[in-house]
Amino acid sequence: MTITIALAGKGGVGKTTITGMIIKYLVQNQSGSVLAIDADPSSNLNMVLGLELEWTVGDIREDLLDQVKESLLAGGAAMGTVSGGMTKRDYLDYQVRSSLAEGQQFDLIAMGRSEGQGCYCAVNHNLRQVVDSLSRSYRYVVIDNEAGMEHLSRRTTRDVQHLLVVSDPTLRGIVAARRIADFRKEMDIHIENTYLVVNRLQGEMPAALLQHIENLDFPFLGSVPADQNLAEYEFTGQPLVDLGDDSPVYQAVAEMLQKIL
Picture: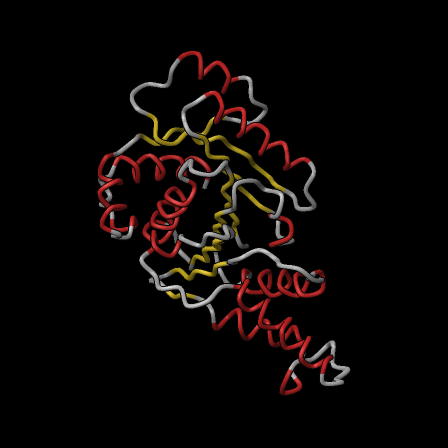
């Protein structure tokens, strides 16, 4: 069975950093391969993981639509096929698998830019089927989402075993986390467990903030401390997965994963 872990939270709270630490932990401590899905249009998870990213699913989608348009303009009736006689599904499957960035015991696929003008429904449906089919080959799938969760069900039809809603240690952050988590009740996919993670905490959790956290309808999983070493990695561009196992950030994420896995 594939275990899916998804991360959500408002922009700038450090979801991608925590995603990188989750992948580091899974590779080092769990058996089976890991598929990382960067669902944020900014597509920078590859930098955290130390991988080159040549193209994204968004690039593949736009290329396919361009081919379909050219075929129609040339009088072709092949809405279900592309050049060479391939079906759109087979074409997307080939291109998506070719776009995988390969790491050690993990692969990365980036969703890339959002849709432009035009009809994307059929292409997105095929893409979702391709990504779901690809995911079955992995023991773990870790999805780094954009600011909200509105598009998660457009990326996958798979159940999500663990949703981590990330917040900074502010009241505004906790309120945003609650609103984001509320989306899970309206989605077409089943989310088994939802947790709050507070990132970049300096010292102890303020009592006033803890009171607001305790009033949420989903549990507080843990906090990740602020760490100056992380900033040094960001300045130099060194992959965050190169952080040592003694890093307080990595240790905090590892402790949380030990609780839920």
